[in-house]
Amino acid sequence: MNRMTEALVIQGLSYRRNQKQILKDVNLTLPTGQIVGLLGANGAGKTTLMRLIAGSAVNFRGTIEVAGEGQTVQRKGQVSFSAQMDGFDPNWRVGQVADVMTALFPDFRLADFLQLAQLLDLDQKQRIKRLSKGNQRKLQLAVTLSRRAALYLLDEPFDGIDVMTRKAMLSSILKWTPEQATLVISDHHVQDIDQLLDQVVVIKDQTVVAQEAADTIRAKGQSIEAYFESFYEG
Ligand SMILES: Nc1ncnc2c1ncn2[C@@H]1O[C@H](COP(=O)(O)OP(=O)(O)OP(=O)(O)O)[C@@H](O)[C@H]1O
Image (tube, rainbow, N blue to C red; front, side, top):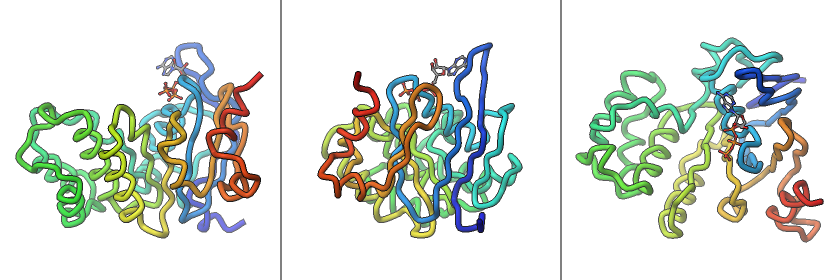
């Protein structure tokens, strides 16, 4: 197998926290150039899996490689995670966020950020804490997509977002995700992202229980939502 053609290779990943098993023997391979839905009920482990891939959670068993990079520091450089601005000062203005991202990440493209922010109607002078929830989500998206990464991780980007904002965000995702990159979106409202997906990955009972091409599901006349729900029935 040529690992360089894979955006992500996870083998035998297990993770415990505070005596609790959170993920157990996760195996997952994602090729480059795909939009992947990471679907699971509340508490299934979606956020934890993203934190492990992004290198913000450590001390796991198994291996995680992004674009062939397995060591945490190198792997971090390949991943743009929507939670990467979580520690930012809420008093910072949108323009300052861009300055900090430029300083922190050599792959941050300021020109792209400015275009994306304009497209999403973000005011450069507004402070983070004064942004509405929807505008905070848009800022998170603009920041995440403005890095040049092999793998983009968006953790429930549409949580609490109205229909119009969602449409603007969806078209930004389609337009701004580099073709060679892979983008993983976690969600439990599958309808939000249905049309976007090339692949679906289902997490249940602390592990990945299914991975399927979205077209295979559609060809069977099934909706992605019905496919997802079938793992939680009975
Ligand atoms: N630091 C921690 N200590 C103990 N348990 C934790 C810790 N972090 C997460 N968990 C537990 O791990 C499980 C998975 O949580 P996680 O946030 O990854 O799920 P999720 O699929 O993202 O859920 P949601 O859709 O609700 O955001 C949950 O049962 C959660 O309570």
